Length: 390
Image (cartoon, rainbow, N blue to C red; front, side, top):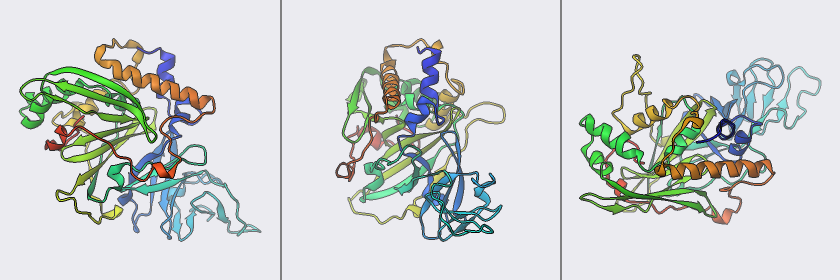
């Protein structure tokens, strides 16, 4: 269990909190790139407790800035996207993607440039997803995970419904090796659904292990299970990447699960899925052409969850812990060792940032960032789940 004080420390996401300041050292997914179009080049965003506007100007440059105009606080979301920036709808002040005010109509020096006038953050698109960085500059490199940059296949994206719980509840699930037996296999079996997934995850788990990894390009925990039964297997394991990612072999694809805190009590989850070509051929695919699937929230009007899929089962388990799980009430077991390790790692990195140091998993050397490859268990790659394999 955790003390109430440590639980608060690990779950805070807002600017100025220890947990929020740590999370701001990492690039966070905002939305699929396909959501910004010529017809609708701007989007409201709430991330890490901040209300922002994401836009693409007429030259194709991404901007991410505070929604409220620094002049008189009107919403920039209702403004006008122009060739070189975003113009406020209230008085016409215009801001470029770096947050500089580049035009102030009706002022004496209306064309005088005012740098750093609006709060703005770096934004980049990679592999069909737009990422934002809300931390101190200079920003680290956006990690080039293999599923984002490989050319020998196609990509798809899945956006899950907003989860009404803290991000850490979803991330801790990534280092829980035994929940798949009951939460997924047993529920599916009880409903007569997906016999292949039921057979795979319903095998007896005879052992499990956790490796704390500190690689030059990522840090985290790789969990591995030893399955018994008719088809025994020892997994290579797939990593939970610090602070909020799971890299997963899933139904024939290599998938990254990103858990972006909207605020302390809500979480945005997006998956990026890479499907290798059977013949290894390269595929041309623009970011804006990557198919995006949006999943509905499984909770019905009667308050009951539809538990017929992996994502719905996970969502139920995470949301029913409470908006922010009270970890001071837990009774942990041996299978929770990975969760204890993750919490220890999270607390250590928060303390490093408080000391003015850089946390783990930050990439600043471009030579290390050409393509970041993972070696993962292959069993789940052959399942046809249509859902998350964990």
